[in-house]
Length: 341
Ligand SMILES: [Zn+2]
Ligand SMILES: [Zn+2]
Image 1 (cartoon, rainbow, N blue to C red):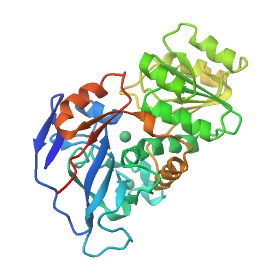
Image 2: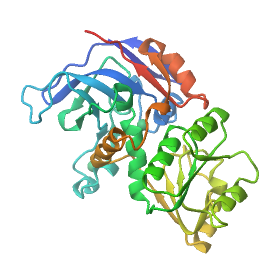
Image 3: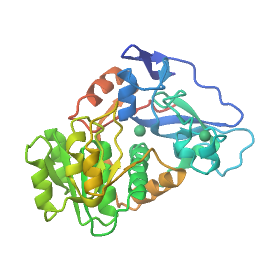
């Protein structure tokens, strides 16, 4: 089968590899769509701490069940349209035993630590396979994972109805975060972004957008929030240029939720954290419940996933797809696996 593989040394290639053999406890899924995530970009940049080549990337995807284990315990059937909860937790560590498997001390992911969905077929454990309801298309099914990231961050926050929210970054996570904040009852959602095309999309979604390159960005946020700053700031860029002013966007006693992942340590004014009694919290991936909530929110039309997809390419165009995704003018680049077989 065709697959897009990380080859190490900052390179990605379209390769021909055998279809994975269904193991006793695994479901074989014929991939339909799989999206490129920021973490796939760090893998290809050689900056991911765990990924080792050769690796078929891809952890945000939809597909159709092609084969089931001989002894099944679920009501899943061959032909079902599904998405997959891609976390691989050890189940043995203290955190897993506490019921917090999504922050497992040895957390792994399909498509980062094992072969993933930038391929015609992928394997997944039966309890990680989730049916996509009729209300969601296959393309939207591939975006359940990033939506779950944002739902998890919203649940980690103490966002309340009527709050003012600031989201830094209008990439796929920033935009989905903004829409989740809006669906959660935020009165005002302000998004900061530098890329003109992403600013346009954010405007079309009805969000208040500020150009993060403006030198008076902090004053503009202050003006829009009656001089207070955001009640909750969701940081969704992971870009070092945001760190120096992050604490200036949040109100006294407000909260910063770190959603984007920085590639290294960044300077942040922790004195302002004291003086303003700000809470700074981290948010990592999602629970299985967040996945379920993501499907529910999208299926009910509370968050529209379609505008997130800006590019759809066949697997053959793997190299080109990564080139497009590296360019901040695009949002989600999604690979379409060939139909049939
Ligand atoms: Zn992802
Ligand atoms: Zn664990």
